[in-house]
Image (cartoon, rainbow over all chains, first blue to last red; front, side, top):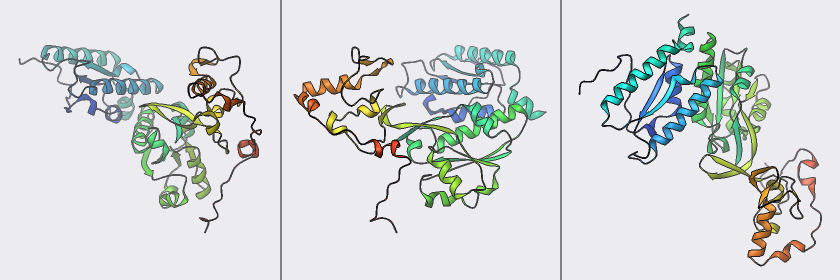
Length: 114
Length: 222
């Protein structure tokens, strides 16, 4: 399909979004990522039944933590799309990059560089 | 098990505001089972604290360790070589942990990262409910396996109060009236008469009313 999406999105593959844990999302923020998103399968279509639903709850937990710390919770997000939706994948990447750009650099990174 | 909840982050951050190097000490006992203070949660809290500090532009060194239990001296002893290397130690165990640690290492400061809530069990994954009040003289057998001391809002021992409606307690529609359940079960099992049998007044001296409690088992004391 040769679809293009922003080059600043670093893709980390996992066998199922159920593998994504709270600590993985937090570590990304801790290490200075401006935003992190999880791209899981459509709800109800997880090969392992509930992997994407578990990921969704973990994303919500991290959003809550960020809010408690005074960091915009929108920097973390969960998206659902099927493996056949290449164009949607590229669209989500653009959408998330735009959102994070609007929020500006992560306050964690900003201070670290200072 | 002993059930606990993590303290609000603001409270934990306030405790360690003057510290630059802390140890988060997890416990592999009850708090691991209720997913609040085990190795995994120690890692999560460490990351959260580092994020919070980086945001403020200050660095914080956070080391992580979990020991088998924080309620036995032999495990508490395992941190003796490292405990003094930190400005403070955050214990993720129940309320027993920070106290045992403080007693063993009087020069160090130990902060609790969790609020110890009750003795209970998991009614489903991620949901825990109170089942025992630790009153020191169990009466569950009188009530067909349900404890009115822990599970009735008023700890009534002689039947439901006027606040019981449709099987729920007046404090919340989400709280079952345990007396409703006890009476229904007694009726179903044909044992309702049990409830009218006179019983001696409960001796509350074995509960907290008798002051801090201690249990000595002579056959084990060395």
